[in-house]
Image (cartoon, rainbow, N blue to C red; front, side, top):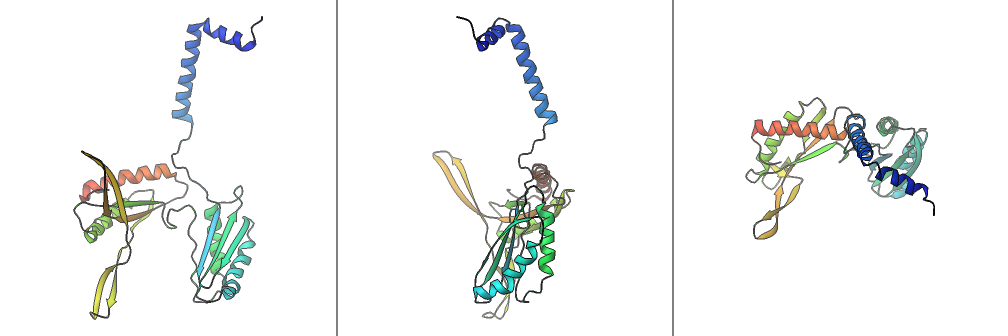
Length: 261
């Protein structure tokens, strides 16, 4: 019985072991060179999210009125943009939501978001309405990266002061547009005490799981301070940006003596 083509090829390489080893090493070397020198690698690449959301609180008390006063004007003005592929909207007694789906092949979400904002702001909407358009691709609608700061020893107010110092240090990074500590304390007037008081208006907690001798795991909870950081340019890769911020954060930690991050 004649050998088929696969058998012949296999025998060719089996009978020429030195040649086979040389070919294998050459392929490995070429693959390693390509991976380290020519392929663009990014752990968290810049992703264009093809959606823009326009949220408008409007205490009309009537879904039909919200639709007529807010949703339809926004819908009509946005529909004229050629980058828009689809629009979905909902109207309730207290809020209007317009979700815009973009043409992924022919649109930049950041540029379209600016166009949408310009068109919506030019509308003659009721004064009591408050338009909100979160920027696409941001983790919380405002920032590219969030950093949580916690400590075994410091109180929350002192930790917030350390966070302000660290944010100032991070803003010196050439890639950073701004770094802001998310405020957890606000001044308000206490009519019962008839004076200004400082109260905590938001909360952020971090849970850690650590091995601990006789016990497999130990869970610990910490109050945290959050720093929001935004890129100076959205063309900056997320991996490069996060690594640059990490280095800057480490320098700030050493200089300022902050606790754990």
